[in-house]
Image 1: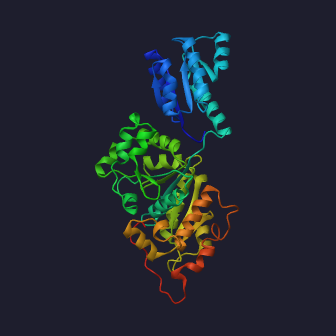
Image 2: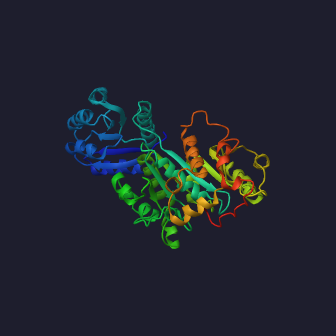
Image 3: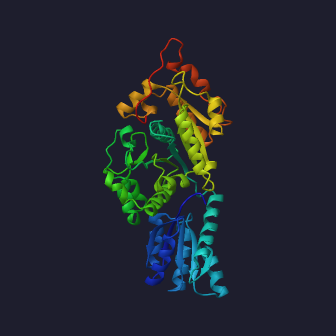
Length: 412
């Protein structure tokens, strides 16, 4: 499954409900949206929380349990029902299926059987178009100052410009992240607030904990105090990512240069990893080192796409051909050097798409977003393999009489 499944359960037996709840909370693919102790209230709970799967435990009162399944089938057709019962009687199973259940499991539930059953229901939802996977992009830097944060912020805003998308940007650089500065926002809540309260959050409260930018982008920033970074438990961070994946169509993760435990979780969760570099030897050697490390974890290296930033910065840059020979793989995307625009963007706290919508760098970032989303039919070589291609003629720094601009000093 490419998405977290939202689940609600009903069981009047408190001890059985707590046992089932514990099993569900241990599964990364599950978000427990609600629990209910009365059959007669469960249809209302489903209607208010809109989970993808409702789990009905029949043993306390089979007739009431079957009645509520029928009611949910009529009132909440998007919710699939999984039934749990200690009865092995064929008629009980048949009655549950006739009432509208998609799956039936015997109690006590085996955790692996529960995972398999939930997986089958989740895949049915995907095949019928009921659920949509979240596009998760992690942006990583080969060193500090290569522009990873700038790319993460502006890529997120490019996604958010499409009204069909719902987009969240998470600043995973717990010490020196500055995504909030790039967007000129002062958030009320940070990543530490959300992770520490993840067990009490539902989808509505989670969205209220995020900072919404004028572009439509939602931001979850890094903690305010350096000391607060230690308060974020990896397991809680993982669950927050799971909930956000179920809530948004796109999620962008701006990771730190430490490649610590939280950074690695972000990389594992990503569908695509943009490894940002520049055309100089220290950056390219770091790319090689990182790729060697990524090889040690199955499936990680294959997700990496190399993005070269500030192409055309000066005449001393390593050539694209030599860069590809050095790192041993193809460059996926190239972004032009547009120093003046990026200084304005950084100092004004306004994203590219608002500050300079027609600039070469903005157009290239927008095209990158389209390419990652697969909306650029037959993505042209001028933007991907050969790089800046058609943006070249717009570069202020590429006119013959112009002097090259100095590189920005920070991560812009």
